[in-house]
Image 1 (tube, rainbow, N blue to C red):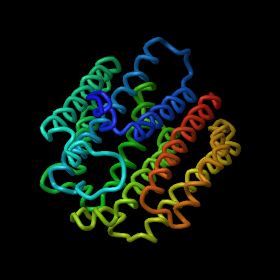
Image 2: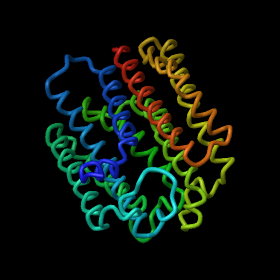
Image 3: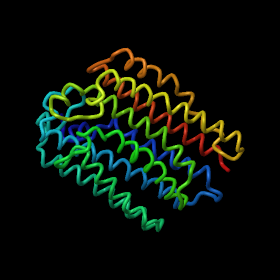
Image 4: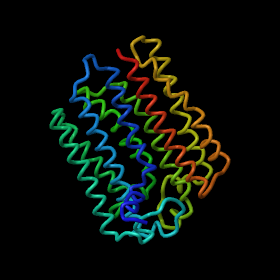
Length: 304
């Protein structure tokens, strides 16, 4: 494996849709509520938001690789190759890659704040970087305490969607907050199915993820709920919009992704394990991205 391919595998590209999806939905929510014509600055802001989100996702992937690797959590693992756990890359180099990624996110974030003047968002950005590192890093990683899904929902759902919209509009909106919920749930579904696959190895390593705490069957039920709830939410958004007449009337556009949701939900419900859950993870990532892009388009078409 070449050096470039090794680092690319370590960045876990299948997780990158989780970084693209919320930015797209945030931009769609902003487009819906923007009463002005687009400016070149808007595209710059959206692009910088995407850089921040992608850099944080890559950074957390490298950080998890490093922290789990040095703690021995990845010694017995089914799934994508881990750089430290497999001995492909020295731990200090993976740690450095994580901090370089966080640095890229920080620089892009500071440029965003300088352009928009929304300096009150600086603490949110600092918390996002801290959350990325302490998921598995530090003496008391919250990912080992079963809190990973909560933080993913907050930062790859609410913060990423509403944050993008706020940077474009200059204010937090109800639409962006509501739209962040289905995006956050699907991001959580990615983590849930990943941890479902690793219940045995995580439990043996003392990593008490939510999946380990809930057990196999309840984790499967949680995953299925996280897959289907987003569809109910966008339907509710559309029905409310029809009543108030100036809401996101095209928010139900993601309904056409129902076939993409059916296969992974059925596989998990029917007891898929090990390598079969890797396919489910890929299918969930595709659903997350396509669902979110369609939601973004639906919101943008609902211009007020």
